[in-house]
Length: 247
View 1 (cartoon, rainbow, N blue to C red):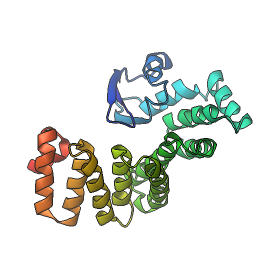
View 2 (tube, rainbow, N blue to C red):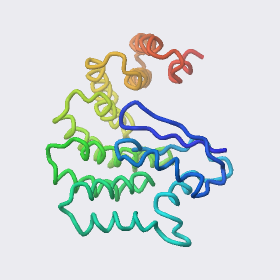
View 3 (tube, helix red, strand yellow):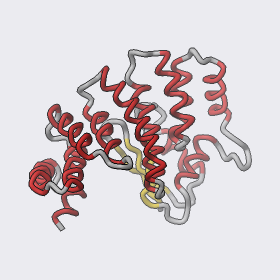
């Protein structure tokens, strides 16, 4: 078995166990659970077992490119976006398809185009930021932390634009803080500032509390780290950051 976890821009997420063989038929229904672009925005592999979940998802979304090529409806959606650059929904649909298979540069390009078409909407701004953030995070996880910094800076740019329109979006502000914490060199003070702003809006936001605790730990501020961990414990005593620190 392999476990594929889908996380949304909010706190919601769901996890599905699928056979390791990862055939198109087996994963078809799973991916379609996130057909609404507001549902699935990130794909995380927690256990590859003997197959590649990412490759299986790519076959489901784009088709098996080694044989039949991309699924016709996917090709049509991307071509539509290219042929109709003034069509907001077409740009967003193409961007979401690319994002789901982690082609973050292509996703960002279409999200940015959509943002120009609807300048009052925060959705394409946030998703452009997510694309750059996830590209940078992937590079950092693969050992290219220095190379990831320009994309974290791009994520900062788009998150900042979104927050100018929706300053109380706690999830986006927390991701903004994380973009400062993960870049090279780290800007721990700026990350802490953004986390504290988020907690001023939603004091029990679990992700922000865990990130703030990690930032205080990086800074060597044990007093504030301990106080933050106690708040985190009250929200979720099973949070991995809390349990790891306790052990």
